[in-house]
Length: 446
Ligand SMILES: CSC[C@H]1O[C@@H](n2cnc3c(O)ncnc32)[C@H](O)[C@@H]1O
Ligand SMILES: [Zn+2]
Image (cartoon, rainbow, N blue to C red; front, side, top):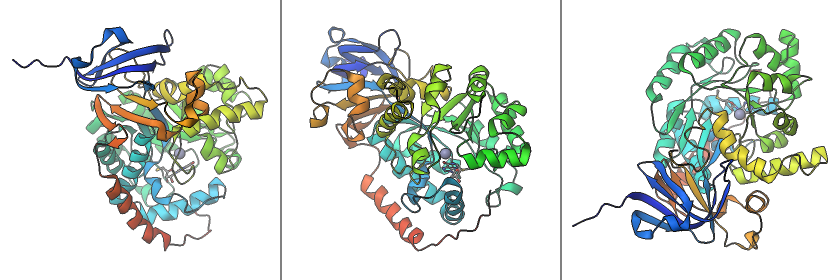
């Protein structure tokens, strides 16, 4: 007689970092996964190895919720290192010339696939993407096995997009994925400086109609704020407010140059903010007032932004940078603690994207997005405080296992879904053409 194992996957012998407020750590425990869900979590005594089809013995490993990269432009791996060490506006003017030529659906799929492999290898289980050809990015996520928040990227001043109808493709994407288990539609507009008032209004209307997050870049640079002030007499935040677009569900990426009263305004309106510290530093944009946003109760997520402005997609580095940066600028080592950085990279990001009932913590009934981190390395020895170890010493390469929606995607360091060598080779081939292209310095899009 064959007995069916009660669980699909069982992880035993690990230290659990649940990210649950009531019980954030369990010293030696296990987690059981069944039908895509977390079926049980708890101390070791609860589990015996033969209870599952796959058992992962995770002694000297940490088990925690998968990381949420709450803002990225995945396909921009294609342009990683193409143009560095210049400010955002001339950078965008170059990047947009590249994108008009090379961001074809097929290239976007290949560039995104490379990005998603990089992310999964570093423990990211969910990414929120904003790019051209949303369907191509989505296909890449489905192939690699990553959970994706995505929508049609509305932008009016680049390419022929300005003349095109935004409503129909946005609705089509939303309706295709509304009840999908791993693709979560959202509405997204690039920014107040590249999108018409009509498109901003349309985006807000669609977000409200479908009860979806509305994501946009805001107040990333001093120049952006000045551009909006010159055009409208309002800052980007003030402009969005005047349009009634600041409300729960609105997600603002960057928020580096907030003006007086804007932190409090965002808190009052229930707006979430995504912090992308490494991209902001590399473009010389500045430093977002994260400690003030935290103090005022704003929901915060953490993002890498794209690989052309970061230039990697490692959220461990992002947590560490965030924690160190805010201690440094405020001259206060408590400004952003290790646990707060971990929260931003897990439950905070999930909450910002409206997914906290599904993911972000290890809780029975949530979707099983789970990672294990090996503590065997020199740089993770010895061990006192887990949050400290993870934020101040761990690296993406320490991730051993990744489970997304109950499926094992990375097993003991081996990616199970796609051929990594082929993924790299395909992007190298596209890069040969990109390397031969010379964008000019003319400002034409902003
Ligand atoms: C409509 S597709 C998204 C669009 O955003 C561009 N982008 C990449 N990084 C940034 C950034 O830091 N600020 C503003 N816009 C950015 C990307 O190149 C695509 O064109
Ligand atoms: Zn961005």
